[in-house]
Length: 79
Image 1 (cartoon, rainbow, N blue to C red):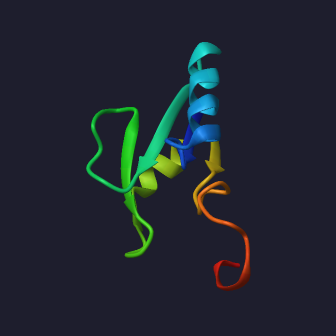
Image 2: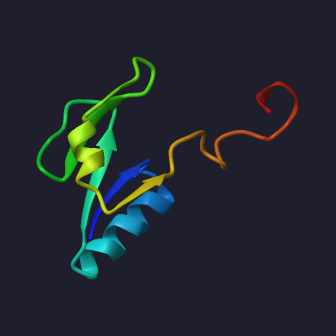
Image 3: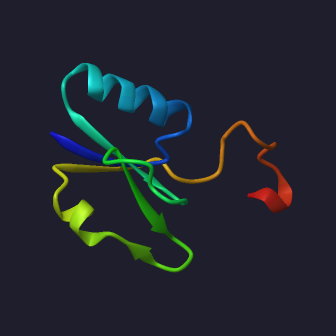
């Protein structure tokens, strides 16, 4: 399967992509910088830009993007 993953550089994303590769699947990381190979695709969520062909070619899309759960206390204004 071809699996597109946002948040692939995080704790869960790294474990997921490693596991997918070990099972002979093809993970493609969505990155917010210039892509560094076929295993990555650039996107800019703030500008609403993404390579639609990458998404269309995926069997599965996994969204792990967002704030780190360990970066700050979940209190007050951060919520």
